Image 1 (cartoon, rainbow, N blue to C red):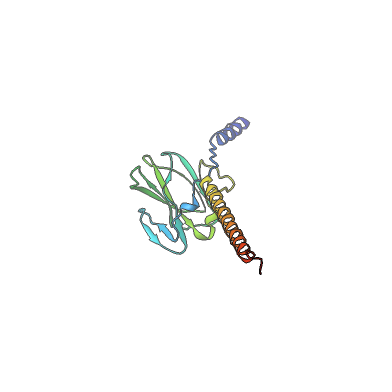
Image 2: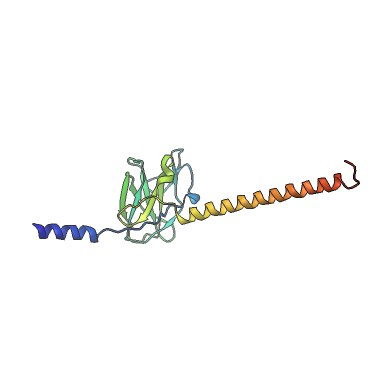
Amino acid sequence: IQAKLDALSTEKVENIEIGGRNLIILSRVSKNKYLDELGNIGDTPLFSITDYIEVTPNTNYIHSYSENYGTNPSVCFFDSNKDFISGISGSSRSIFKTPVGTKYLRTTLYNASIDKEKLEKGNKATDWTPAPEDVQAEIDAAKQEALSAASDAQSTANSLKNFTDTAFRDGII
């Protein structure tokens, strides 16, 4: 019995696949949209959909999130021409294998938990992290905001200098 238990636990450990990188790029999401079972896009205030996410065919992926979509299709697969291959129904934690010939997938995201959803390669979910592209987008936005603030401050300083130079030019206030 112990040998069988050891073999089973070794098999379970050896079959774990962990990806870690979140493939959902929130800055590229189409808001208030959903995918039907044929890959068609519809309008709804409840869901959003990802852009085309490049994936590897015949590979395990896990989509984890906090809401159960019920029977709504949440993942659709596309070939290299972005032609629809197939779709699968949602669940609160979905492990799936991409079909042969898949180059891209799109997934439906629940708007109420959109910032907690994660799609990663493998069959074991890891803690939520943003996609690197979203981190870079936040850095770029903060940099632009800082540059705009610096420009506004310089403009205000130049206006104040111009005012004081003009006001005190003849020595009369």
